[in-house]
Length: 144
Image 1 (cartoon, rainbow, N blue to C red):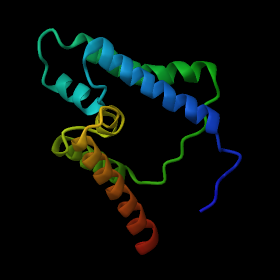
Image 2: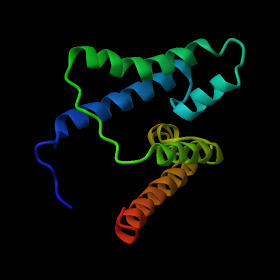
Image 3: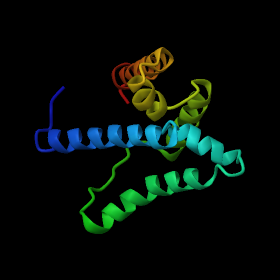
């Protein structure tokens, strides 16, 4: 494995991580909610009266912030080396996994681990391990 030193951005990565942590902590402290996208989005699909406003604002912020950023900065071209079928299958598997795992990477990995949740530790270890195993199998055994 090699590091592309031209694309190595430790300071902006650190700042981004701190920003995510502070935002998740503020969300929990000010709203008493976990900033897990699967729960936020999943509850939009099964609406509860009086609980929609902040969820819609959360989703709009997730979609709108990168679009707003792109108005003022050069955004690198995105290159995805997968077919549409593979992307759809991956999205469905992630969606099913978040339902079975009672949360997603942001809910378990960011919010759950910071609360020292053993369930979140097990979930995070499971999906990270599954990701490592998938990449190993696809890259080294199937040479994809």
